[in-house]
Image (cartoon, rainbow, N blue to C red; front, top):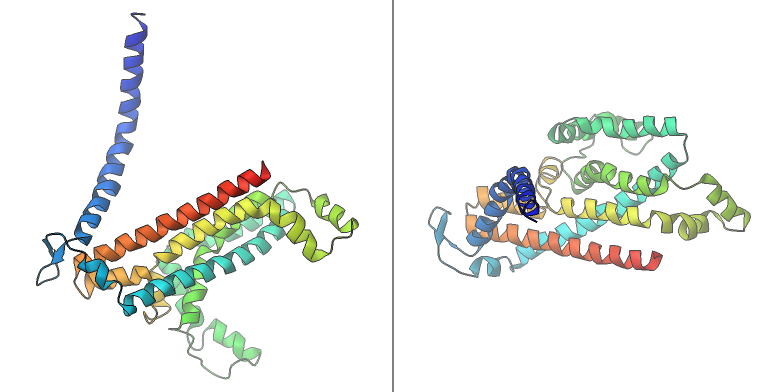
Length: 290
């Protein structure tokens, strides 16, 4: 009994020492900045846009103006549309990958991963070159007769959406592929032998199997899309702003730090709410499959 207590104390001390670096990092780089942002969101702005202090709800009330509500609505709609498109394309790509041999799967996965070894900003600038007048995409559309001569594809809402799909499509592919990779190819063949057509094979057999991966893919696509600000600026010209662009604008151009902090808190609340919704959906799915 006398030796058990020192051992427990030493074990607790070792555990605390091992967790201390991570705990200090999370406290200093996550919790403290988050608390400062929340505190500043209730503060007043001085003449230069800095934090003057006090407690007020005026920053949140200002965000209820139609011009800001339009940005939040547009962000939610764009995130939802990007998620749907990424799920559809991710399922098609994952289904194709799962049907290949293991060696071919590794090669195709490597081809998907390799472009993302490059910096995110560099890849976004690459799309500017691809979509520029007289660029490769313009040359292709000229060849098929869709356009005639140099065409201005950027900046535009369509170019911004293409950039979003390109940025988050691999994030959607990998969870869905992880759900489908263990499915035996004979399962689909058996369903077809029993009278299922192409559509019913996917909707009745394969999609229920891939549903956990698709739910994870939706979570990993929807939430990051809300906070993106580089792609709408470079490919969309900043015309249709997402919440991330609004926060940057409030901090840098309007020089209103308290209101920028309030917009950041609203974005955080939207992300937490989305996580809760996806979590509840995942729990319901587990209950159905149990």
